[in-house]
Length: 308
Image 1 (cartoon, helix red, strand yellow):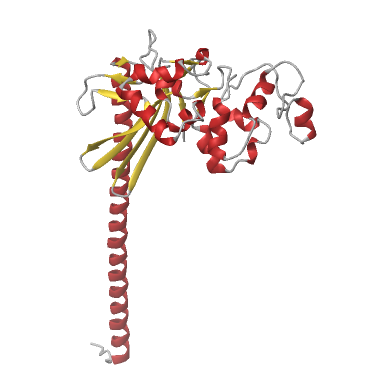
Image 2 (cartoon, rainbow, N blue to C red):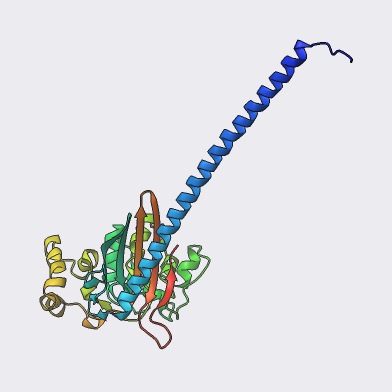
C-alpha cells in the first residue's frame, strides 16, 4: 500500500475553502430572507392599496344607489340607507364614513349650482366670480359672448377674429358654437395668463353638462358675493344660513333684487360630480366622476366623465 505524505498546507486550503463557501451560503441565505421579507412587505402594501381602492369603488356604488333610488329636492337628495344620513346635500359639502381602519371623505356637487357654459351667460355673475378669484378685472362676459356670436364686431374688452390673429393665437373664435367642455375656457383670449392655482379655482365653478339655469339654493359664498356684491361678508353668511333654515326668506333676496329672474332656478340638474378620498394609514385612493342620475330604461345612472 502506497503511503500518502501528509500536507498541512493542502489541508488548510481545503478548510479555508469550506469556510468561504459556508460564509457565502450564509450570506445568500440572509439575502434571500431579506428579499423574502421585502417582497412580503411589498405584497402586503399592494394588498392594502387594493383594499382601499375597492372600498373607494364600493362607496361610489353605494352613493350612486342612494342617489338613484332617493328623492331629489332643490338642494339635496333624501333616502334611507345604512351608514348614510337621511339627506345628502348636493352643494359640495363634505361627509365622511369609516369602514374598519379606512376613513373616506366624499362630496356631491350638482351641476345646477355651477355656471353652465352651454346656457348663455348674459349676466355678469360668472365674470364677477372669476374677478373675485383672480383679483383681476378679466372681461369674461364680453370675451365669452364674442366667442359665440356670429358677427365680427368686438364688444368692449371683448375679442373677435382679428384680435386673436393680431395677438398670435393659433385659432379664432368659431362664432357659432358653444363650449363643449369647460376646459374650452382656456381658449378665451388672455385666459392662459392666470396661474395654475387660480385656473383650478375658477374651473370648479363652471360646467358644460346639462342646460338648467343656475340653482340659487346651491350657491356658495363666492357666488353669492357675485350675485350681491353690495352685501357685507356677514350678510352673505346670513344668506348661507337661510339656504337651509328658511328657503322662502332666502329666495326673497332674489325676487326683490335687480337680478334677471330668467337666469336662475330652484331645481337640481341631477348631473352630479362625486368626489371621494379614502385613507388607510399612509395609503390614499381617490375617485372623481361626473354622473348623470336621470334614469333611462336601461340605466339608473350614466358616467359622463372620469377625472384622473
